[in-house]
Image (cartoon, rainbow, N blue to C red; front, side, top):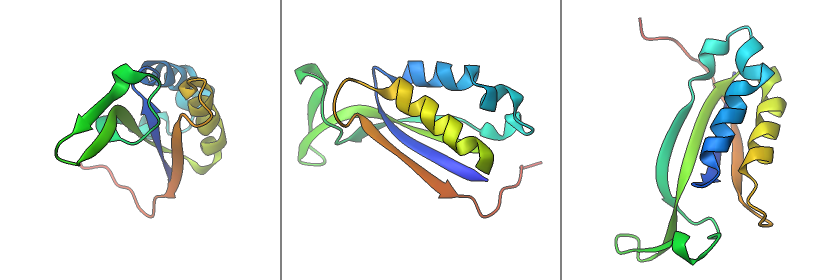
Length: 112
């Protein structure tokens, strides 16, 4: 099992989530219910698309933008498809529009 983490611009997160939920990996996976999609609003250092995205954080002492951190659990054989969907739908036209990380999950268990 893997965890995909992606940092995405706020104006692209809805398209990313919609595309993930429409994908074969999401709907046809053996353990489709184990995706456990979570999205957080975070302050980050992605390059701003325009001046309206930039904010100065007094707490951090530097310029930041509001971006989204997406976390998604999946089976090992679904990683490539899901990463491709995120890459395609998170594009902003910039050379670098975010980051995607994949982490091994050592153990997972439902809370029953």
